[in-house]
Length: 65
Image 1 (cartoon, rainbow, N blue to C red):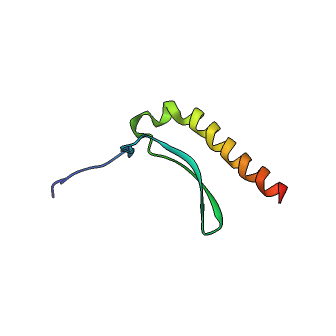
Image 2 (cartoon, rainbow, N blue to C red):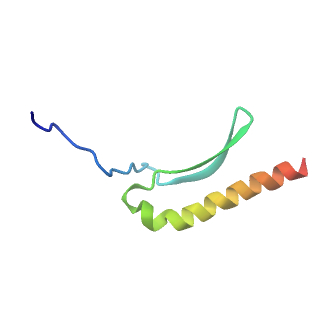
């Protein structure tokens, strides 16, 4: 038996860079935070903070309804 290929620890990277944004899909808010590639660990704190701010903005919007 031989190993044809392996894919351990691969992190996908988006052509346009990381996606950190909110989107309403079928009347449900979704926060996207992916596509960081190999520098995902370095960007994790900043991107997590940005995702948190997006979630807070959704919650504030819902609170005003």
